[in-house]
Image (cartoon, rainbow, N blue to C red; front, side):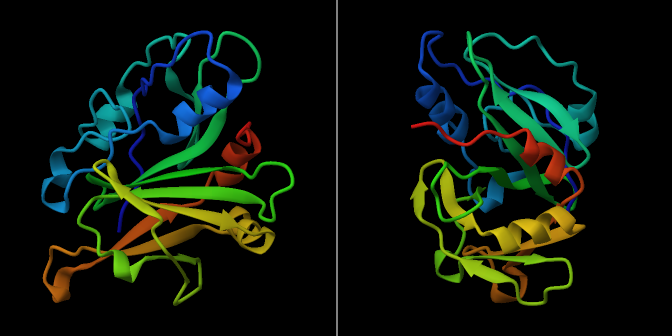
Length: 219
């Protein structure tokens, strides 16, 4: 099962005079994506200057973010608070985690943030996986003792990867805040049936703290 790799600074540039909605969109959607499964060991993900091993990334000295840069503001156990530096006003932030296979190969990117005011869900989770994922199998998420979990569909694939955006209801959010670990299940469409299933551990330690400091999108 996988473990989190701590990340060096992430750089995403937007114009210094951008409004809040543009800044949040940049933080949420600007991504270099995840290549095909066959090249996972050497991928670059979400604007990382370099990934390397988890230990090397954890030891990297962060650069001072400039206006328009996305950066890791704080590490909270298995989660990080990823924010966008803005010239003034509240910085948009998200609870953020990279999921890996065997602690080495980055395989999924997870972002969670509060839902906008008036939404019928409590939070939104965005999961990006590599091209080559078998889309008909969807993405299943099981929390702690759940055996089957809940299945979700992928909404879109681009050259950068395939994305499932999931509305998290209060019940699921409470389970994530109280839980120890979630497991994400996906299927590699390029592998033999016997080895196609991929299970990714998503530790939940630090999730509540990271989400509490995250911000909803602004329209």
